[in-house]
Length: 525
Ligand code: MSP
Image (cartoon, rainbow, N blue to C red):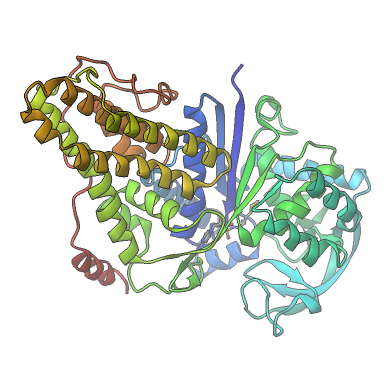
């Protein structure tokens, strides 16, 4: 049986249209899902939307729509956007889906029956946009510590989850499973900032929020956002539903990928809920950093600091999904914050995609056409330069596999591009056009062409997870199926000798950076 791989994104708030920031997580999960599929695993990739809470009601009201009407439009736009960005998820969950609401209710009732939920009253500082209650000491200058906006004092009857009982168990969990929460710096943050000072019980119901899942046994209350939201990861698989075969097959998650601002919810509250329910914990939670725009986090309710348009709905038709995907893995070190600038984006397209990859492919294909009528030659006479080149390429393959296993996407994609850099350097060094003119040079020329084509094949196989569009074109020109599992990654025997190379157009046209910057500025109101 195939090994399974279950990966999730956070479910995003559809309080407004998705941004490049939300796209970031969805894109990195797509790369991980594709890569694991190519490794031969049975992959399940879940994403979706977190549709309850006051903020949704407020956003809908603002434009004179019902919540459902409003949400349906945003969800349709979100699905279109994911398609535009070549995201291939297996399931899109909406927390307003009937099966999810039922499971969330059952989970709440079960926690109550097990004595982990009790009724009390809540007093605290509430941030409406973040839907978070804060204690006095958590406030920063009297404002919400997450978003910096105004908070108001509120008191109401509410149900509480006994989070305070889980401090020691969580510390033990982190100790026994060093990979549970990554990057590891997040563990210290959780322990020092939240667990050591003592965990408070968690307010898990509201009477003032009407747009939510009613508590089964007390309909005045709706389930307060995090139990509802977090349980999506199991409700999507049919947990406590009519058919739980997916749950049996895919749970526990191999990785929940999230942004760093929701680490507390995923590494403290979620495992505590699962422990209370006696459910296996996810294997790994990976918190990536933020894409910063002009030093600011782009959020749905804040204006971006960037002067140029950063809306993927505009960028994809202009530059392609591959370019945006690549830019995000490459420029934002996975796990840390990174700046997005239009200039860096356009420069990457020119330097890495157009020059390094695109140009390599097109000049190699032209040479094979010129010297061998586009027929893939077999290797013949091999020199030291040729075998050094081959070894360098194969070493990078191992590096990519290792980095992907460590979820270091930035290093992985950089290693893929190292293959293309090696190939370009190799061309400069061995000068095939000189070899072609040498007497008896043909035997060596065959090797050079074969090695270049094999390096491009291997690089494109690896690139497929990151940039599916261009790599598929290249692999198809070799007569290969881009979706097939990896094969011949550790050797230069993956191409069918004597078969004919397909035709390829220009993969990434070179851009005039200044002209494109101006164009993108004109899209900003
Ligand atoms: N609904 C909650 C998550 C519940 S999960 C059970 C939520 N939604 S959100 O719409 O605010 O999305 C937050 C997520 O979007 C982040 O965790 C991150 O994955 C992604 N990002 C949004 N803006 C981002 C950046 N500027 N940079 C990187 N990721 C960002 O929180």
